[in-house]
Length: 265
Image (cartoon, rainbow, N blue to C red; front, side, top):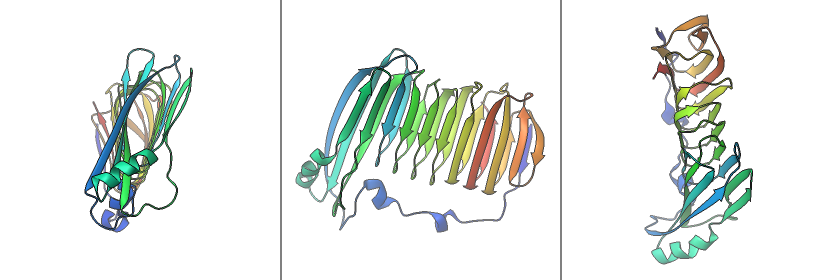
């Protein structure tokens, strides 16, 4: 079916947007930061079946890919910015990564720096290969979170950046404040799908045969459902509830400033 709910009153995201240029670099600058220095490392860790992988970042992206096996591979890129390359190299040792590893849990976190950095900044980028069935918790503040090929329970959170999930199976919780949430599900299990943002849109892609109970709510924006058989139980300009193929997995979608789109794969 094709169902379109008209947008509410027009709004301007420009009026709501937070200037992120300095925040995303993790710095307070006095001018252009032309100096750069990078330090990279890769480590592997064994993980029990259904173990947890937790990545907690501050400035920079987090990417997690599901793979076969029982080993977690973490590749870290620490990037320092300063007025000169020499200044950036001096900053690199201050970017600290904390590892907390047990047989059932691999937790890697970017530790926060004390004080205010003037004329300097940093970011840390994580690329992780994790067992497909692992429980995933991925967090950052200024940066994106990307997940793909995972079939365990997934939680992804950021503040300034988007969340993208591709070819996922199982429970998904995805949150951001300033950014888009885009999730593609290869199939649905019994556990809840919960996607939300404040300033941005939500897009969910499902198999045409998916069985789900859908609730979608927005304040300033529209809701569209295309290519899926939705039996509507409640419908207004800003809220829709209904059953896909008789109902099943609970799905909740919500945004304040942006639209919601649910579509078939």
